[in-house]
Length: 329
Ligand code: CP
Ligand code: NVA
Image (cartoon, rainbow, N blue to C red; front, side, top):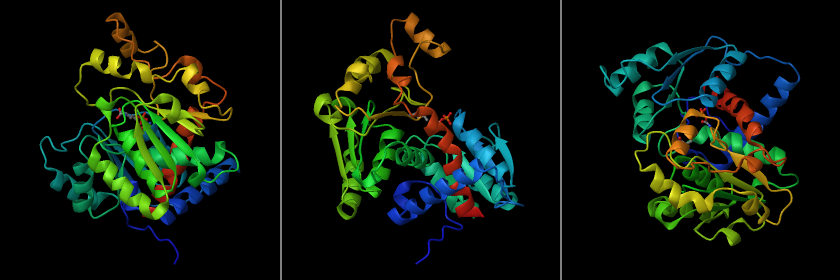
């Protein structure tokens, strides 16, 4: 049966079948090629979308804006609204549902994006919550397909290093389980994934052949990896002791030594960005002055010839375009 995603929200890859994810990736490859050929479309002509942000963003906001405009739709960016301040989630969702054809939401609880979808009556796209970041995963998988030659996703070993309880770790786990990949979450026991989430991905893996593991042992985890992926040590909105977090995660910083331990000269380095790989930002400087080194990756790995971080960033736009075109168009 042909895939039809019209009217669907995009809240988590857990809501999509492997065939539907395959369809979104194929469409992303096609839309990227179309843009490369200089073809601008009007697949979303006459549509209006709203971007609702309760957290900061560079890539996600810009990807949604450019994707929308390139296919002929209009976009409103909303960061300072009445939403959940002077107006309930339900009321704002109903109002936006009368004005727009789709809503992007970035914020805290996954429940918020689920409830927006329940009340808005139009597709809602998850632009990151504390628990998930599904549009990022489409971009990451598109990048893997482009950069790891001669292998389908189902033959790849992807290692996520660092805070394995964060939104990126979980979102990658969901995607890897759906696409039958070998996924290793590597980090300290104190930041191990929630057992309920592991149960959920193991259940999915039964039908896809995926292998999803958690370990704190670096050498075995990275051996033969096709990709080493990391993310910041403290995510947006987390209230933690930074010195404590840095102490836990320093052994898991992606160093040249760790990267070489894969034994695979073609291993790619991945990061969703933004990243602390040097001390160029105000925040990194601020921590450095307190004697805290928050770099999750060494600059040399970040800038390594096998680093694909900016390809991932570009692919946010092509994959988000595929989500918009297929769910709303
Ligand atoms: N990767 C990502 O979501 O980046 P932004 O926070 O800049 O949107
Ligand atoms: N884990 C990070 C991802 C940023 C794209 C955060 O939530 O801050």
